[in-house]
Image (cartoon, rainbow, N blue to C red; front, side, top):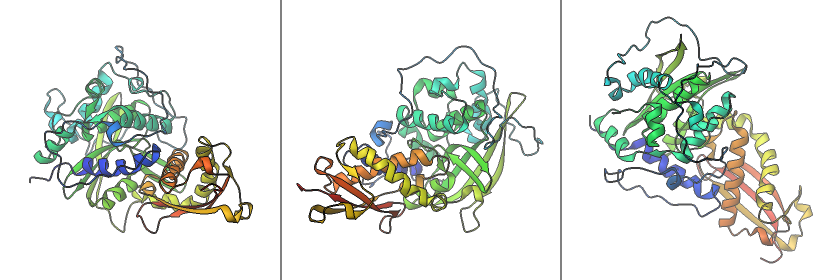
Length: 408
């Protein structure tokens, strides 16, 4: 079956561009999609599609991958995640022949062979700027590295959609050397890093009417909370599987099928099996719950945290623009009302990354306020009235403020 080219990646370029302008404080970019991406377009730079300013690492200069293989370490100290080194029955375990390179054209075989190569080659998580053993930070740092440093190979992704399968899938060492790849390459490298660092590791395959894609993922299981979170280039924070499905649905690419593969280490050998094939619908498993569900469980804290973070962002431009708790503290003759709708951010929300999400919301809100004519240099006081899901923009947040602007 011949597919329309580049469904998932074209969608994410469109959506990332909407968010990136407001995060960076500049004007929001407008992207009109009128065609599929052609073969003359070879790579998409992370800086072309997103300009995140909430980077958690200082990107050093290019490093040469290490040359000595370290012993794999399994983490067991964090009670909210499960170790990736387990023993299970071999029934339904994917068992490819990794001696030849045939696995490079079969993503299921690459899930085992490609990830295994990460443990055999002179490459380490540190080569991807992973500086921690904390599971949540590992995923955050990998998302940051991928979104800020690695290019999407648009031509190859495009051709994969046309062929109907990913081809010439790279090993982690090859991706680190080339610094560009497809979503399949990103998934293989992410899964290697997650396994190496002891996360409960998954790879998610998603299929839409017009294409397909792979994401590296990990699972968070706590009391009353069970989510699969994934890395979706070029976003620099992990997002829930449910959020990714919502994002694609919003963009007109509803997900038709999801396959979830679980990976683990057995005596230093990578094992994987398909544990779920499902279609999004009303009977959604808990680990696929929409990101909006996470938000509503935490909505009270969102407003409190924006009250803390937005003034800090604004005061970087004018320390004299003070936040006040009540509109009664604002001189009514100089009062001005500002309303903004920050698009799509709800789809990125997750409980484990609430703080990083709040940073994005605060920077985005300020960017949109400036587009509405808010000038921090003229501001004396302001108060935040509303922080709620937008009734006008699906997946967006509506923020309303009053400000004392005597010279406006």
